[in-house]
Structure formats: C-alpha cells, structure tokens
Amino acid sequence: MQLSAIWSSLHPNTAATLVNSSYAALQEAYQSPGRYYHNWSHIQQLVILQQAYVHQLTDPEALLFAIFFRDIIYNPLQPDNEEQSAAAAVAHLHRINYPAEKTGKTSDFIIATKTHINTHRDPDLDYFLDFDLQILGASPETYQAYARQIRQEYQVYPDNVYIPGRKKVLQHFLDMPVIYVTRVFRELYETTARTNIQAELNTL
Image (cartoon, rainbow, N blue to C red; front, side, top):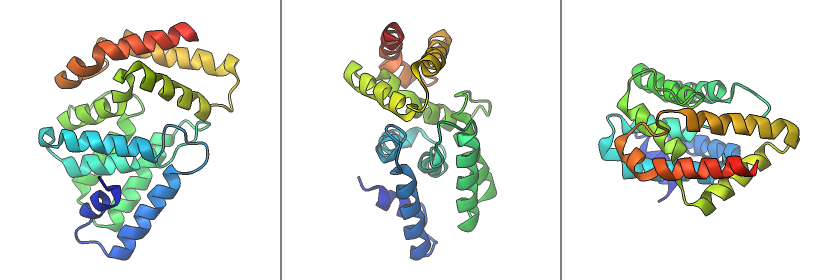
C-alpha cells in the first residue's frame, strides 16, 4: 500500500504540485526528530485499518484526512497538539476547496482524539477512535514496544514526573466501561488491551 497513492486519490481535482508538496510536508512532519511512536509508521497503520473497515464508514474520505493530519503537530511539551493538528487540516482543506461540512468533520475527528469521547454521535468517529487505540490490544510484545516508544517521546520528563502521568492515563482506560466503542473492536481487542494496560501499570 502506497500512502502517496492514497493521498493523491483524496485530491482528484487538485494541481499535482500542491498534492506533491503537501504530501512531502506530511512526511517531513512525521519523520521529524523525537517521534518514536507518533510517526509515519503510525499513520500507515491507521490507514491500513481505515482500508480494512472502509465499507463500514459513511465518509471514508473525511476520516482519511483526519488520519493524515491526526498528529501532524506533535510536541509532548504542549497541551494543544490536537487543536493545532486540526487547524493544519482545515488550512489544507480550505486550499483544495473541500466541502465545509466535511472539513468540519475532519477537524472534529482530530480534536476528539484528545479525550477519545464521541460527543458527535458519529459512527465514523467511533471507528476512528478505535483505530487510534488498536495498539492497546496488540500482542504483548507489540504493546511493550509501543510503551517504550511513548517513554522515548516523553524523555524530556524525569521518571518522577512521567510515571505518575502515565499511570493516570492507563488507569483512566481501565476505569472506562469499555475501551473500544465499536462491537467488532471490542470483541477483537478489549480483553487483550486491559491485560496489556494492567501489565504496564504493574511495571511502573
């Protein structure tokens, strides 16, 4: 699967120069130093999930744009990465004259990854949020690699700052009635995700 081809398919009426330059800007952002998990590989994994469940989605294009811009701005020291990423998405979508309603949906989806709460009652957003959390239900080895990558991204913080914050995040997931909103993701990943999270908590 070529992400460049998928990106191009989202721009059927856009000049090739803009398509290519915007794609290059995405790559540059996701390959910047300090990104160990929120990088190009993460975006590729989200696109793979989008492609796998595309027939369950009402607006797969808007969701794809949300995936591509989901972490274009990522700074562990800043609290508004989601809002800034959403703004970057809106700026790009305005440039290509994307419909306002679909632009708003893309922006809303990105901002929703901050809380992982679907206040819009949009079934597509349920899938997007579950895609984003699929890593929690991965194999123990994959999950452990993910946990190490997150720690690397937050290496600016000493353990006495990072560990309490990480524990709070992990406990929040365990306290949720369900981690995954869609039935299919709940059946596939819920039990493993809770086991993985508890295992990480036990090591902190």
